Image (spheres, rainbow, N blue to C red):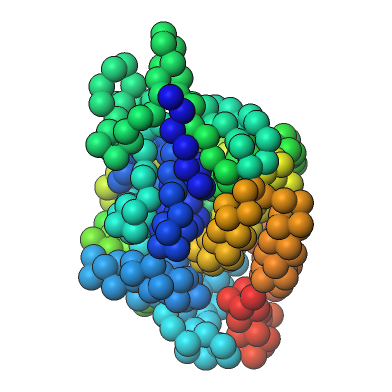
Amino acid sequence: MVERCDVLVIGAGPAGAAAACALARVGLAVRVLEKAAFPRPKLCGEFLSPEARAPLARLGALAPLIAAGAPAVTGVLFSDPRGRCLAVDFADVAGVRDAGLGVRRTVMDALLVDCARAAGATVREEFAVTAITGEPGALLVRGHAVGGAAGGGAPPDAASAPGAARAAGDGEETFAARVVLGADGRYSMCTVDRDLARGAAARHFGIKAHFRGARDLAGRVEIQVFPGGYGGLVAVDGGGTNACFLVEAAALKSSRGDLDRVLAEVVCANPAMRERMNGAERTDEWISTGPLAYVAARRPLPGTLLVGDAAGFIDPLTGDGMAMALRGAELVTRYAAAAARAGGVTPEIAAAYEAERRSEFRRRLLVARLLRHVTTRPRAARVVIPALARAPRLARFLVGATRRP
Ligand SMILES: Cc1cc2nc3c(=O)[nH]c(=O)nc-3n(C[C@H](O)[C@H](O)[C@H](O)COP(=O)(O)OP(=O)(O)OC[C@H]3O[C@@H](n4cnc5c(N)ncnc54)[C@H](O)[C@@H]3O)c2cc1C
């Protein structure tokens, strides 16, 4: 027997969990398949931008996040490779009414999955989707248990997954859905141009770890540029500091992949970063990913809709990826619900959703691209950051532009 649902969501990151929550709330039968087990670490700067607050509050996740100790982030500080700084406080930026937050992804993502389950979605963890076949309105999604759920053990939410068919022998299972939401991140399998994300010119790798004892960041998220990359620091719940950097492949190679050396020799070539990290002690393992490619928009497989990074991956520098994933989940909910009721995603529904997504995010993507030109070119950063420090109104305008649709 093949389990059926109205909407099947692949991936339970912020985009997938938020969309599943909203779709379950409007009475649809929603199933989520996620290959990881929560809480799961995630390579991320862990800065949640102010505009993420509203969608989080609508999901019921903002108050628990603050109660879990997520510190307020009241501004941003940029420093050029010589350590010269430019600070902008959100209170001075037109249109920004709130502070951001520093959030551990282990905490926030698990909380969003709880919201989806509480709304009535069936979330299956440790299940990797491997194939999507069928026609719009009658899609078949295949995959298999991974990790602790593989090898015959009961899946983590076995009680909420009755009737899932297990193919004899190889453990493959198949699910049928009217609508499939691709919320499976930047290497989404729901795109027709999947190779674009992997093959696009990309020279940066992401690395991240938590530290204790880093210098006080004065409530700001910090973006530091150094020869060979750029990256950020932010205080997070639990009293630590998240350190996340994008480092050129050549810099990683010269440190022979030893990420503590990359921090000491490459990242801390920036005097401001050196000062912050002086005496800081790493409290967990480094995680890394890459090379990272940036793709503003991708085409979904027929019958599917894309949301979050699957739909387009913004430069992490803006710290807007999670906010866009949450807002994107709100946008896609209306179209996915209409498609489920109409029997599937029609080309008209797909086109209308894509048009609204583009118009909502166009400006942020454009400014992110401009900022990326500065942060990935240390010479440009040496000119632009001190110049903006002397032109605070322009600096505030630019920061505001990444924070508004
Ligand atoms: C270096 C770096 C730093 C960043 N810093 C920030 C920051 O400070 N602030 C910010 O807002 N954003 C930041 N981002 C961006 C942010 O992490 C993403 O925009 C956000 O996670 C997107 O959410 P999502 O739900 O679309 O995707 P994801 O969070 O990637 O979730 C996708 C989920 O899909 C699952 N999945 C994938 N394939 C399958 C499959 N085949 N079967 C089942 N499940 C699958 C994955 O396990 C994952 O849980 C950063 C990104 C990078 C790379």
